[in-house]
Length: 463
Ligand code: BGC
Image (cartoon, rainbow, N blue to C red; front, side, top):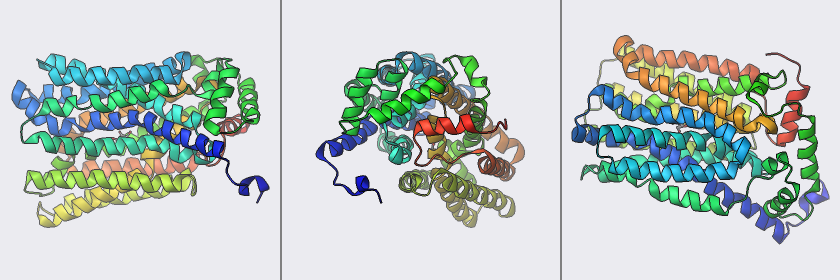
């Protein structure tokens, strides 16, 4: 072992490490709002429907308005982050989160409620494009996996907090509280981002070397950060891209773009949000007689999601991204297949309900150690700095667009094909995503972002 590695860690270095973690926790609050604002509607909807007398179509629009907004926010957010910086865009994001939460809480009509949900969606899209990139650009390479996965952890925590808030306010039919309380984390997120620095990589990209130097000294706790700056500069010098959309189709970028877009689509078409958004409905279809039992089991699903994400964070820089991805997706294939078959074999009975809960938990657990965190991590680390924002934003847009399609079609698919075939369809999509991961997704564990850029440059052309 090199002497450097066993030397005692200096105070400044410790402070530097602490700084990254504090920064990561605040930035990750963007993920918490993502989880909260997408999860909260499931419990709020029934009261909103009652108060405004919504039709089923209007109900669907209230739910999917957020996804539509997020699709737009993700594409705008990437370009904005490349132009104005990750930090500034995240400050604007926090403001939109706050305004959207308040506006939806006081909405006097369905139209204003839907408009505020679309605005909230914009913030979610912006956060999903920028938080992972912010985290990956401030984290040291050896812990980047778990630092970026804090984003996914925050998403899962946000979902559980939303379920619990729904539960707490259900007694007073307090849907306005459910939606409005999101203003609290939005305030904390905004305040945190105000005090956090811009990422050194974006600063160097814009030629602001001195500020970048100061930020790096602060976040690494090292006096000499010249080697890291040199690595970023020389990697930038080798990039032939100029930061335009057309660069996405550049020969050296295409393979990474394909991997990001593929994972974006697979993360959604393997069905995760049918469970996250509709778990109580699935459980009732499987024979859970009481609505409250189904809701409680749903909270259980949310807790498993959080727990397994923590396990993933622990393993992601040790085992690496690929093993987790392949094992997790294999687990999704098995659980979805058993779920699909069990709907076919048994009649709605206590038996099926038990199997359904085990399968749903197993499926969410398998997602939480694989496609959940690893999709957001990889798209924040595999693109060249000059186009990182727009490339990540494009992948995030594909993710939200696929989410929208799956969410809008799930209930219809169940009605037309039956629950069994629908879940078997998601199992099939999982098989395709396993093959995709096996053949195309590279290992990025322990490499600096610049080494990853060099890897794509040196790679023979396949796509
Ligand atoms: C996905 C979301 C999903 C969440 C569940 C995220 O990685 O992008 O669509 O709701 O995981 O934990």
